[in-house]
Length: 293
Ligand code: SF4
Ligand code: SF4
Ligand code: SF4
Image (cartoon, rainbow, N blue to C red; front, side, top):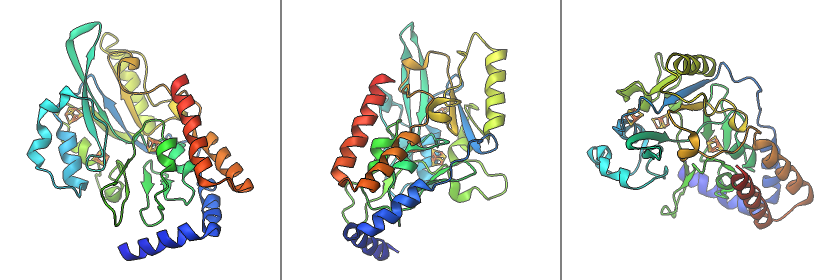
């Protein structure tokens, strides 16, 4: 498989025709407007105790990197803010409420599995696709390593194996979709969470649950479900006790970014804009969106 993929990379680099075909495949990625029955996870940061067990479970379920699993429960990492990387598909960060400096809260970060993912529409060879069940799935065999998806992602979540010279891959939370068909499935991180901070269900169920928690405990929660509308809605959603501006989550607006990246891709392949120009164009748009967020 690995050899086949390297051959594919070489062929892809040489064959403009393959890219044009890929552009069509990216553009044709089906986008369903109603994701209410697709699955997602509600991350309730009010209930999160910062134990990092979700990080450890994710690592045990997926990682190819060599780490001592016990080290993944070390809470001294909270001294710094971290983002997911090629060895950690999810990370937990600690935040301090500026209005209540005595109070910490924790927030898990991973791919949001957007309903209309910008990474999917930016990928010129269709290596990223949105599964109707919720996950955004990466196909290493199709990936040519261009990393347009990195620029497109409004949550800055993708990681790349820069140290893997032979077969570098894009890495991100898979939503544990490899086991999704198993009876009683729940993602590995959800299974181990001791405080009930992670709930797996359909988007419809999760929004109902979030609204109920906000209604029942208005003193604990702010009246917002992050991910319900942002970038057209995401499969992973958040509840918080403080304004989301005090967290690391961006304010990318409700408009799906995929509509912008698709427009660019179509324009690029219609007029054969060189890849470097495309990279610059995507970067410019994403930076301006983040600045305006
Ligand atoms: S969070 Fe980023 S990587 Fe994940 S689906 Fe959305 S755009 Fe893609
Ligand atoms: S859903 Fe799976 S891959 Fe994603 S953070 Fe949880 S354990 Fe890791
Ligand atoms: S396992 Fe649950 S409580 Fe522990 S850090 Fe992760 S989300 Fe928070």
